Length: 398
Image 1 (cartoon, rainbow, N blue to C red):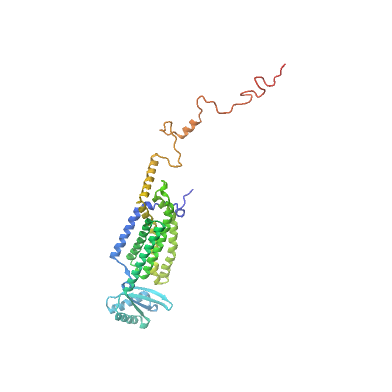
Image 2: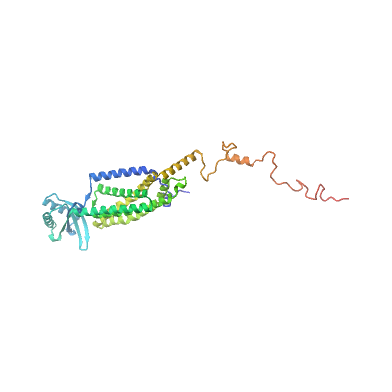
């Protein structure tokens, strides 16, 4: 029979992927990625939106031309006023009153902002009243950041308490490390690529934490089911049982991630890309990146880290050594696994007997033994079939 494909074996939990056994590789890769992310934080930093860095925002009707043309003319107006200000971001935004371009610039004074509006109106050939502008202070962004950090701390504390009550403290530690790893890697991608950080990005960061926690809890629930009472038998280590749980829940986690990424991908690529809904870009981007990273960290990091922590438990460590010692004894032939047939030996118990020879020897009769077959009857063997005694059957007296 032909072997089934990888997809069907994944679905049945029979892929037998050695994820936990390669935990040193996953830890090394995670450490390297964290190092790259931290270096990116220190060297490149983040591309902060005007809500965090401060700046000015101008809204121009989309009828003035293309977005690139509008951005070029605003740059010319800013250069005419001096001060080194420039356009930071430009996007097309739609509303009930029509479509317009939103151009965000560096920080400007009130006099500079009015002068730039006048120059823009002259460049576009429209009235000044058709251009609206606003100024955003960086203090508002700092308030958003502080509240987001407070929400993150409360979320982590609630998660830790739940996981300790639902599972155990080692699972809580592994899950929280996985959550922070998810945040660091997602932020590292933002820093490397240069994605703009906005309040929508902060909201997206807090949202992906819930998704990452759900995926970890699903895997840990299966791990707990497979490892319940594992020290009572010496056939399987804790790491092997956890790896089996990963294989059994891998397809479920993959399906959940794909189903979650499809609408987010539609929000990002269709809503922000094709339809031009720029306000959805920041939220959709962080959700898409964060959910993809959360799936990888929940599979490749949380459970291997849990196994590493559990092996420090003296009871689990002793069980691990017993399993390995038993397997070594089986390999040397010192003990026989349960359910296996023990080979036959000679009378002294030293040399094993060939099974075929033993079968032939058992079937041969012993010396002096009577045959075990039935005694022949009838005229050709034994007594005659007629009357009793030695009289010939049928003979009459005279």
